[in-house]
Image (cartoon, rainbow, N blue to C red):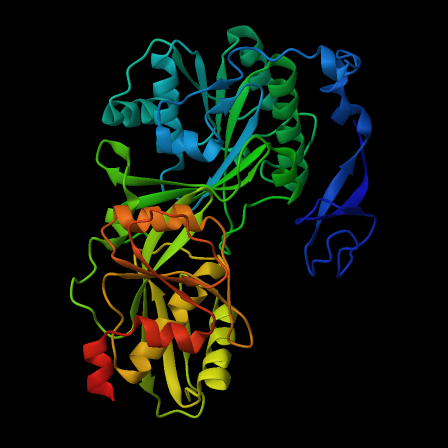
Length: 462
């Protein structure tokens, strides 16, 4: 297998070019090409020849679904983001920052699956067997169905999978595994693509569920080519604040369930524990007394409504350019809300620093939190308070109108279960009868500000 020439590969989408390109013609990214040695296709395709012509086309109506198409992990928060459990023959990618708990959650998942009689092969490409054993002892995992295989060679891994015939394979991690068919170092675009392709064929042809751990770059994206995310069935990001003990698993892609689902865990010495009521986690540090610049919003994370506190701080700046600092919310979205407050409400913030923070470290991305952000900023700027028993729901348009949001019934029920007495919602949303909460419908941003401010504080301000 002789070297022919070098080629240039886009790190974002895997597009190949004979020479360097500043901009990728496939995905449009700039400066994403890296040079790799190009080898003859004979060696690369040799490992895939056995898959050719093995499967035949089958009529859709003749395909029979087995009774056990999904396998529960016995970890309800993990099952939630997977859409109800692991799908047989699926390829799942779990990514996150170093030390956040990726290996821990997958080792715990392997231990729970072994308790149900499943055979699990844990491929450790970065740690020795003794290191995995130490973690397993700390997590209380002891099973005869869990096999640890410290190996980085893909061909050896494939042979062990065929010999052991496990139900679930865990690969930790894809960046440390290499294939002999591609003579380049582990972690390169060609190696990651080839190893992931082999794991995908193993999963589909042998009906084995494969869980793969992926590294992330310093920007927070999955390391390797973007095609890696397209090849797998499910992409799960492990998020969390390093200064706090909880962790969040977020589904960014799922061919067998809803995307943007969130599973919440808390890190303990014996592993990750599920958080059954996340609202207690995000609201437990909230002061019972209303304070200026604080608002409670109900944000939908997949199918789960979460109550989170948004705090804002507005103060006069001595510098020519005021600061806009946002944690947990999109900065451009906050800039848009500030523009609406200035134009439609007459709130002059051109000489004010504005800080917006989502308590608990969670990221709120949906527009339904717009109204809560606006009210937090407005009340802090005027030193008034929002009623502490009120939740805020609504999307703000550029003319100051409040747009309806989806799943309003679920959001209200979650607010009721958490003890809130009043909800400010868009006028266009229909509220089902029998809802045991005071609902105030608003059409404009000015109406929402008037409705949510406590009478005592409003009188004092006036």
